View 1 (cartoon, rainbow, N blue to C red):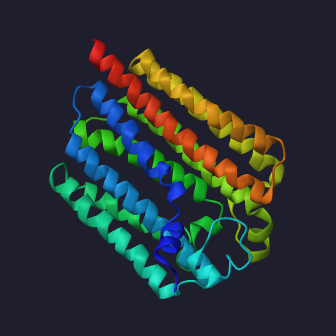
View 2: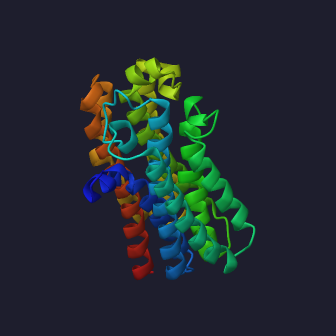
Length: 294
């Protein structure tokens, strides 16, 4: 049986910045509008973290029973390694989704009931990424859905539940955060092209091929930079503190464009995750400074 430490590793804690960043970015825009609701921001963070953990366990389960993880290069997978039964990992995923659903209901009850539908779609998208008979993650659509749900929905939604508005700055921030979240998945799938090809998993990286996937990674980092400039123009130049994300991001781009492959790409996942978190932290800090000085 898997140990507690292995269950934590199976939850892939290094991916959690992808859940924290959109809530920080969305709350930053709410703060700029003088409408932050901190307890709702906290609940949104719980939902985002629970969904991230849920999708990680769901992927572990679904890929494991399909045999996709039989010759895995990346981080530990509980089912693929035989450390935990498929049923227990599936139940862990359902438990995480349950936490997200309950907390999401509280947000919906205090904001707008149509958010229940949004939450339901988020949970279904998390499960069917690799679950079901035709998972969209096996059809090259993983990056699209990550951009939509961990970018657009998460950032704009966080702003909306606090302000009841749809500001353009939130959309720009969502594009930036979503692009970096996609870059994490692109780097992950770039690493797994050989094993995914053998397993019949047609990720976007498999479809595009090695060279184009590396170019896509660099493009997404550039898109995040342009989006940050858009946020600054809509809010305050202090938002450009988010440019600190370029420190780890540029290192990641160099490794990817330099031809790093296999296990050598694992640090790129870490660098991109840190870059996404710094993007949101810098944006939040900059708007906090602007709010204190106006």
